[in-house]
Image (cartoon, rainbow, N blue to C red; front, side, top):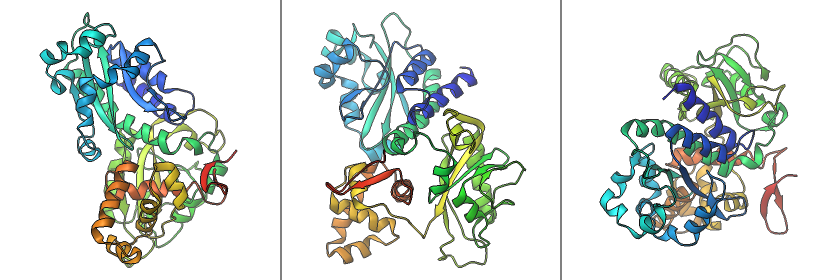
Length: 410
C-alpha cells in the first residue's frame, strides 16, 4: 500500500467531517478502492435523524438491508454485544469476518443465503467506531474475490482512528465550521496553534496569543501576536516532560496520526492549583485552520503540520444545560451534572449539592460518558471545552427562547 494513498484517504476523511470539498461517499469510494472491496457500510443517522449507509450512494441493496436483513446480519449482531467502553479499549482493532463470525456459520446463515450472496458480502473486514453509540464499519468483497488478508487489516487499522475522529467532528462540530476564517477563530475561547513538525508556529489565534504571552503559562513562544507567522518562532512547554510529550504528539500528528491529548503544567515555581494549568489536544492540521487570509481554501490535512488546541484547565467555560441536551441527548439532570463536572467539582461535591446519593451521581457520570462517546473524564472535558465554543460572544450557535434549544446561527 502506497503511503500517499493512505494520506489521500486521511485528507478525504477530514474534508468530509467538515463538509468542505468532499463527502462521506467520497470516503467510501476511496476505502473501497484501497481495499479492493465492492461495498462499504457504515450506518449512521443523517441530518434528519434517519439511518443510512454513510459511505455509499443509496441503492436497492441498502433499502433491502434496512427493511429486513439488518436484523439477520450476524456481524451487526456481534457488534451489538460490544459496549461503548469496550469499543474504546479496542480502538483501532480491525478484524476479518471469520474472526467475528466463523466462516462455516456465516455461509450457512439465512443472511448470506438470501441476501449476502447477491449483494457482494462474501468476505468482510471491519472495526467498531464509538461516537454516541457503537457503530460497525464494514468493507465487503464478493465470492469471486480473494479473502481479506492480514495486510488489509494493517491498512484499515491505520485509518480507523481517523474515521473515529472524523465522525466525532461530524457529530459535534459541523454546524460551527462551514467557513472558519481568522475572525471566527479569534472569537473562540480556546487557543488554536498550528505548528510544523519542528514545532515552528505557522499560525495562532487571539486566545493562543494571549496564552503564549502570559508569563506564568506552561506554554510559550517568541511571538505573542495573533495571525499568520512569517518568522520561525518555536512553540514549547516550559516543563521539560510536557515539552517532550507535546513534541511526540505533534510529530505523530504531522506524520498523519490521529493525535492525542495531554495536560500542560503551570510554569515551574507557580502553584499547581493556579489557573494557568492547560489542557491540550493535538490533531492533524487542517488547511482552513492554517490560513487567516484564505479561509475558504478547502479542507484537508496539511502534511508535516499539526494543530494544538489549548484552554485553561481550571478556568472552564461551561456550555448551557440546554445545549448539552440538544448536542448529546442528555436528560436535564445528566446535563446539569455534566456542567458541574466541567466546572471542576468532584462527584462527591455534585452529590452533596444536588442532595442525591454518590452512587446516583456516579451512574449519571457513566451515562454522560456513554452518550457523549467520551473515553473518560479527560476526554469528556475536551468535548465540553469544544461545546463551550458554541455559546460565547460571536457564537455560531444561538438559543431559541421558545423551546430552550440551541440552533446554528443563520
